[in-house]
Image 1 (tube, rainbow, N blue to C red):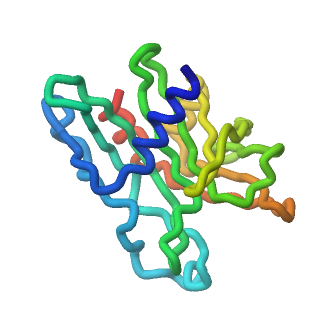
Image 2 (image 1 turned 180 degrees about the horizontal axis):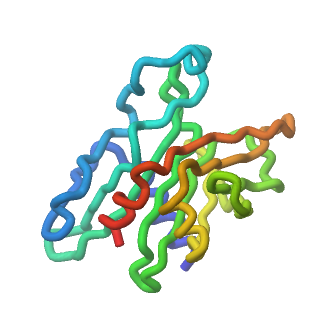
Image 3 (image 1 turned 90 degrees about the vertical axis):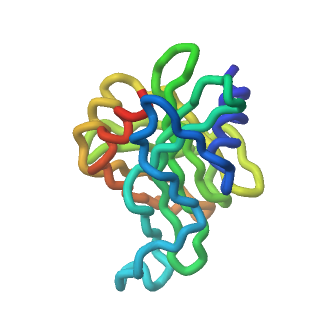
Amino acid sequence: MQSRFVALAAAVLLSTGAAHAQQGAKKNAASPVPAAQPSPAPTQAQADGAPAQQPGWIVRCTSVSREAPLECAMEQNAVLTKTGQTIVLVNIRIAPDTRTPVALLQLPLGLNLPVGAKLQVDEGKTVDLQIQTCENRGCYASTPIAADLLAALRSGKQLKVSFQNMAKEIIAIPMPLGDFAAAYDKIK
């Protein structure tokens, strides 16, 4: 079941240009923004290739056919300003069988795999993630989102995703949470 989710979530994460159906109660979902869309004008810190986030959490709903129910997910990503390369992509969806939120993270290649990745909201508790697989687009980790982490995400200001590179340097990518609650309400 876990590997089936990873494959499904990876397909959702990695699809670009797919038609995104939005019907019924999901009509008010935010318009999808392609992952390759250029970031806003770089600040001085971003001019040297530092990561830049896309503007807010994006809600996307898809269906395998007209008769199938919609599956919605929300995501936020950080890209390198110079190259457009995704550094971190966080995708959250509600698992249809358990109705619990599940996070899938896409991380870059060249990680210290045994260390895994970490999530932290503001200065709260750190959640450790095991990296499950890597392929040519990056490495992936997933986790069910516990009620306390969900509450922190809904009320927090910033999600920090951190990992180590092969030189064992810690890389921490901040992801704004300002519109997290509104986006989450659209997918639940």
